[in-house]
Image (cartoon, rainbow, N blue to C red):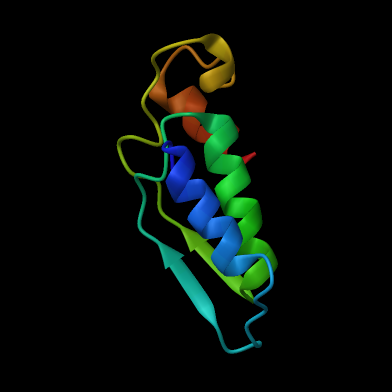
Length: 85
């Protein structure tokens, strides 16, 4: 989702969709290293699906770049807590 085109596709495809109570989505990680992008993508998915189960991948827990990209976390465990928070 770090690429703008991927996020736009997600918005264009799912912002008008609402799946029923029997639709559960499993997100198998590696959405984005940027916590802001990850939260935005999960919010779009949560609005469309009854339940969203997220299993973080290594990119989701990667701590690099500007502090706002990883919520100020100093390590992957701290970032995991921020992702789950």
